[in-house]
Length: 217
Image 1 (cartoon, rainbow, N blue to C red):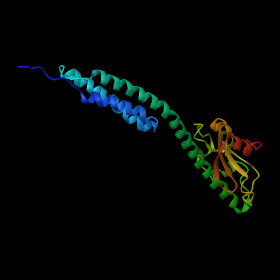
Image 2 (image 1 turned 180 degrees about the vertical axis):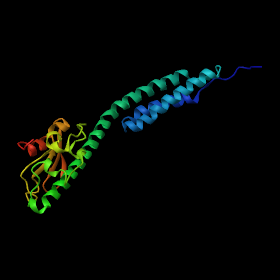
Image 3 (image 1 turned 135 degrees about the horizontal axis):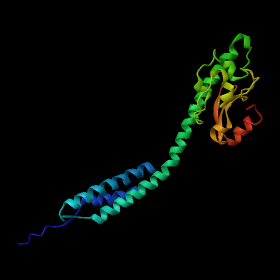
Image 4 (image 1 turned 180 degrees about the horizontal axis):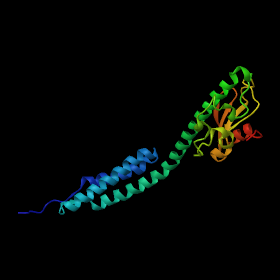
């Protein structure tokens, strides 16, 4: 009587290699999608090797599991390399949005200042003129991209990351620059610009330099 036990390839080993190959292929679709296959390959590879080691020789496929594990690891490294620039751009976009929120608050304060009867439609000559009646929150004068800490509110114009163009009026041409983030906030790659029509937009380096060149900084 033949008591020899049939040796089978561990299904998890096959899953590991298959998932690793799928993960590499799906990198072309998107790093997040490809990461699913690569992570699954590593997990299945680990489990397959453990099962093979405990099977007393009834399961084979160690080579498949190791191949899946190695290719899966390689896929994860590749996908992380692709994700890093995306994460960097996402963070940059988030900082730009926070910066626009600050300029939005500055815009509201400047408008309120101009509407005060004694100011005769004039925007404030400097940020200090907004404190404390129109703006008292220090953080709105700091661009989040710089990670600077606010200084004393009685010295806003010395430490702020924004520039307010003086001697403007609420009835000036709408495309006149009223305020903008300083050039160093984004490493010279552009900045957020506030116009007298109260619109705010991100401007790339060339447009930013054209709009703000020569203005008081």
